[in-house]
Image 1: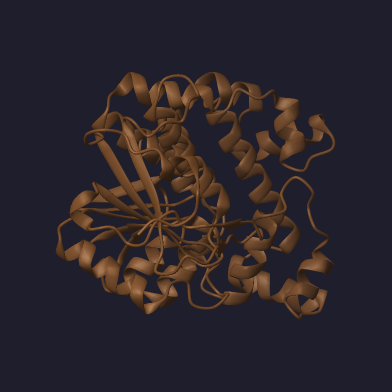
Image 2: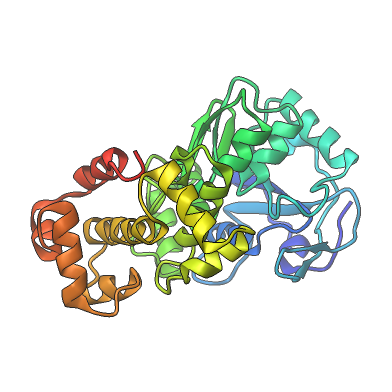
Length: 349
């Protein structure tokens, strides 16, 4: 059964495409993850920008024809009911907001189990990995999640093998992707595997991606909060991580935790051995350290992005922490060294 009147659902190319993908959208799904993935497929499917599903066929599947709401409020209509899994090379589950009610209905969960029984690979994108785990479809499989949801995953699935330092992970006939820009890299990986490297490159270049990253590459700037046991301090560090360019006043962070500034100071000293202001500064310097080793931005740009209004002050703080100036660090470091330095950094124990 077909739903909607989209161009992709109306055109029926002759023969079987090299890559056929069925997509399941959760309630409050992440639009960016879905859009980056599907647009790579679209550009790989045809010459130029004509969008005909010749090399790639895709269907947005659902148990009902009702539009599905993205977390940003945009509505997307399914193009078909659930297809026979044997007609597909992959079934992709695009997750979204974790704590806004149930993400899929019973019919969708039953379909995902049918896909698994048919031996068709399942892909969990963004929090789609949570959906697959809740359906019991990731047992004894490694699961890749965003660093942002790492603690959420540990709390809900303490017995699963989870990683939050990669873009995506393939474990047998399961692929899980952290989401965000990583969905573009996953799409390129699938296109290259089924159609070819040049087609994958074309799609990425049209979308202005300068290079395709492998699944094993590190997620940008993983947080330090996962190393801290106190849940209030973990939450504070995540707030700080999310506000590096424009640091929040410590009093505001304390207020968001329901604490006085003095209580927050004591809590941080007990959990981290340092004040909240020192912890915030370390996080900003750590982010700058990552940018120096992984981007070509100028030192001035990096200083501002890490929340330092004064470049000279930033350079002094950086040298005190890392033993060399930002420009000196850039000259002598490579990407592998940066990843190792981040993993071994002694901030927060």
